[in-house]
Image (cartoon, rainbow, N blue to C red; front, side, top):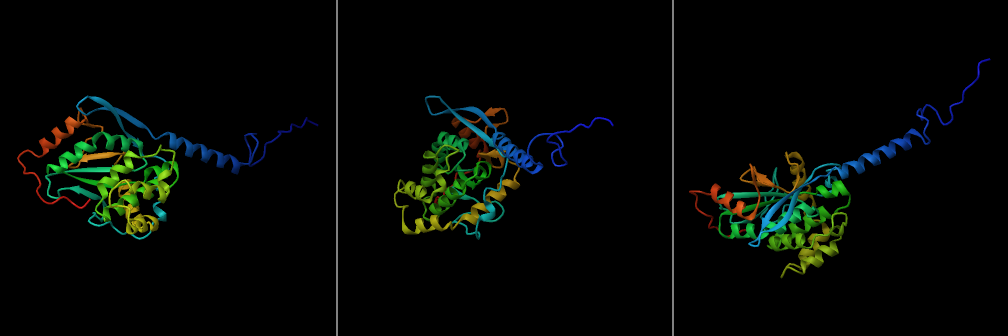
Length: 282
């Protein structure tokens, strides 16, 4: 009789001889793939000239990857904030509505590259808005919630929309980015923290604002904005377009900077009159 060979640990569900069932290995594989997708979010770094001292700031793009739903399936009915754009590309508009150029910014309040962009170019954007050269459309995404887990992107975006209802979007938007927690820290998921930061904006911390934040009044609208982000051809957040042309981190062969942003707006507005209508409540 020929000798019998016993293959220990091998079965139909475990043909490769490794311990554990196929189901366990599949679960481990999925976890590894999910972790790999998170690591695949690439930070493309470029240097931007900031301020008259020529200091360098780091700005970049966090590539979209992993679970990009961002909790949108849990959102409620679509309730647009006061004066906001609804429809296919929801947005909150700041600046003079008749300004000749439009800056569209797709961003996420948990995104560190978005904070780097905002903190570097905030004053320049406000200056261009005040002069009537530019209006800005803020499209709110929840990319980091999907990639990292949590709900801080959604909760912060809803709170910003609540601030828009109160005519305080711009100062609250800026406050959120100035006080952004580290990316893995989902501090913005806590409504109490968002209300605490509202105290930094005079006149914002009211019963109406608190109720809007705690009830998630604009969650559905934020989810619709994120759906528009997913349908767009964007690499990630922030995505910045001037009159429909991408300018971040570069426009053609030129790198974005305060000086170049002003130059690009001036070139786009050549021969056009600046906006004179009253700025939006945001």
